[in-house]
Picture 1 (cartoon, rainbow, N blue to C red):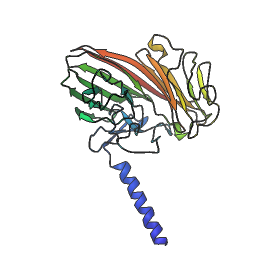
Picture 2: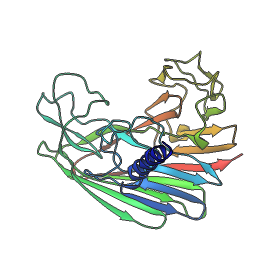
Picture 3: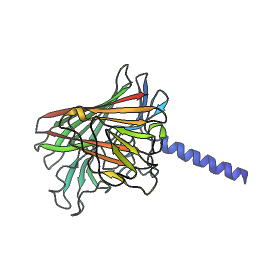
Picture 4: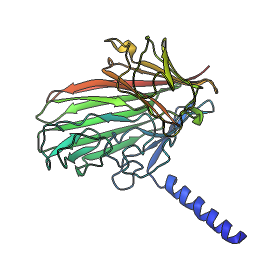
Length: 321
């Protein structure tokens, strides 16, 4: 019996080790921050869903003994829409409402997808990928550059470049974006970061707070009961448990300039936090949480006419207090 239990335990450990070690990855460091990034790969990548941009998955990031990312979702399937980790981003689909069933639409950072029916777009739907485009990756000691190239028969084409860079001598991670329109159609879309933070793996409870530079207000599931907006801060009244719904389709209070793209997520129990700033004005500010992660989702608008290139950055500054 004892040997059988040992054998089962060994098999479980092997499966777990295989599961997390068999995906393509890269480790970067600036001597202050250490981070593990998952690589885009259509056959063996950790994330192969069609919701999020495949570049920029951060499986772990450590600063001064504090951890910031990890597997927040207990369910894993590489094609599950949210089986992903880190400060991951999504672009709103191009032309989805305009195309007919059986025709294609484009998601930047994912590829050319097929619209199956007349239903509204759903981020949870695993749309068929007709053309995944081409990914190239350039790995360096303190940064990784991802480039996604796509050319679609409908007129969309782009070279999308995203670099995750650890700043020399500082506890900062910068997401540098460049989108060059190589097609015949104008690209006009919105993009946001989901910010799947789980600081020191603290569950979503009274020790987690979100701080803004403006007086914030919010309506939606759980607001005013489980989570409260007071002054410039969102605080939890109690732990979030399975079955709770925490969601606002749009927090209010921000202005029309980039200075309000300034969000802090803090764990008051371990005195660790992150400050998120962007160089574009906020278009919308969604909020979502579950028992393991609290996610302010800042949206920006971006566009590029044929031949044009547009750039934007998002900065993450890690700190203790």
